[in-house]
Image (cartoon, rainbow, N blue to C red; front, side, top):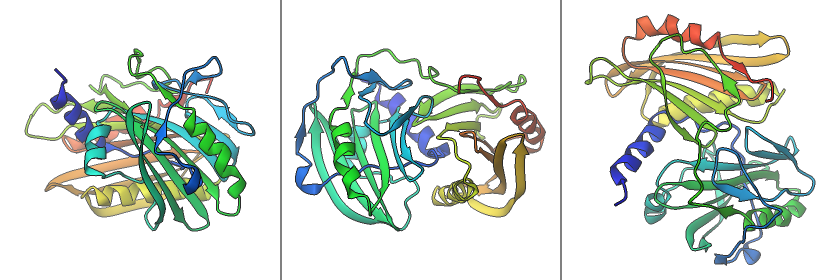
Amino acid sequence: MKNNKLCINRVNNIRHIGILFLFILFLGCNEAKFPSKITSKLTENHFRIKGTKLYVKNIDGFARFDGINGFRHSDSVVIYCFYGDCDFERAYANQRFTFAYNTDYQIVYHKTLTINGYNAVFYKLKEGNLYYLYFMFGDDFVENRIVAIFPIDKPELEKPIYDFMKSAYYDKDFYLDPMEDVKFEFDALNSGFKFSTFSMNEYVFIQMPKDTSQKANFLIFSQFLPTNDPNILKNTLDNVIEYKKRRGIIIENINFNHTYISGVDLGYEVVLTGKFENQKMYSRTIVSSLGLLYSTELYNNIEENIPLTDSIFKTVKLKTDF
């Protein structure tokens, strides 16, 4: 019997604290060439994306980045391979999908299909001068996403990206260590924060409250492609704020005036205070040019936990092989 209750709880946790990764970029292909059924086979040219059960091939002209599950052609052309510990079949049944940080987009094309017997959807969106395309499939415990972005004036990239998607292979029976590809480390300082869940390059740690009527506190770490573009870093924090608002958090104060610089590491932070479900909330988020976002959401014992989590943040560092 499937543990639907456990899966639903995981989904709710992810929806509650998810800061979906940052710089999520999406994939496109020509409408006439996108089939209703895809059959892919695992070959010697495939390799497994660490932290996932998804196998892909390299794509010509793109550099691969481990730890972020990313392939980059240029700053404006990126492919990500994401894996989520959640119920794709429920989303598919309701045809309700999130499009990360696209807020003012036009749906150019949408299709439902299957890949190796798994239900799947494809969306091609246009926002500004970019195409964002999502290919999503999975089962009632997992969602796979291959997502990419490219400028609308580079249509020649569409077919090779589609061929990359078409060859993807999902091995449901592979035993997965969710912390396999963590590229950061930190000292929890006896704070009680324990690993809870992993989804889409995001790792969530929970500190359970002593009073069960209160909400848990969260630490969230998201890995992404490094960037030295300050506009991308600032826009990321803007997106974090907007995402929290869409979740129903009432933000009462925003402090976005801190610049975080350490050696060659450029970054920014934002501190938010407000309420969620009539309960006080405090959040601090730091985004680093080295490819890591880390954040806290505090709902209980806030005054006590602010200096504690600030101290934890001072211990965060990337592993040497990042």
